[in-house]
Length: 363
Ligand SMILES: [Zn+2]
Image (cartoon, rainbow, N blue to C red):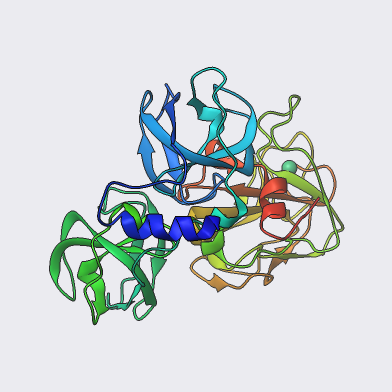
């Protein structure tokens, strides 16, 4: 019953202003320090599709349970607001009139109505240089991932943006893909012209991290202690999995090796056990995954067995557990960063809920 109403609304949206099954809830963005990310799903690792400055008015359709956000100025909550265009913002950063409740997104509306028109098939035609996917229709928009020449594309619609002279055509049109990301149409070969992006073709929220593929535990059989940014150790931006020297460490997801580095205080070696008083992550490997996610594996017993630029599969062995650097016992220190590159302490997130949400709980 509910589903029928939604389909009619999606078709009608092409003709008249968007129609909703219930009135949208008016609210205001509270984010005085930096613009609020509007995302494709209900977690910070979902692609950021645009930003909204402090004080922006938003129209909320309904709420879903997602990643718990502790850092918002309005409330601590795991509720995310689905806006009327199908995108999400954390309810921790949104103020409504007192007493106003937002309805839960009904089962029938999740995922929301599919675009009124079927996707247009295409393929990347960018030659040797991979085509970049971005959060918006311009090269200034956030870089999310890269697609190799010949990658099949499912184009939902087109939007006008930055003009690009590419291998296929010179155009200011950008293609919005089914995952909600954008690529310049200048590097896309296709047989039909996709429809213009309208409210009816709002991006379909992707499952958190869907772009990054399958996730696995970096240290199967071992569990992590909660330890991300604790009150006594606020600079600890990962979790520790206690283990034994020589235990294989696995890539948590498919990706590209970006760093294989010895990081240690001057005068010390990564090739011997470190100590609690010695600074540094020891031998570590950093991987870049799709969707702007990076993972870091510290304190390896010796140099990782991969090299920068190498592609790795989920579960591939990248090194072995040790105690190099700032470590008093053999363990894997594991970090997850979002909106990368680059990685920084500021974009590290707690790996425990992240891995749980990706079907690979580690503790
Ligand atoms: Zn650690």
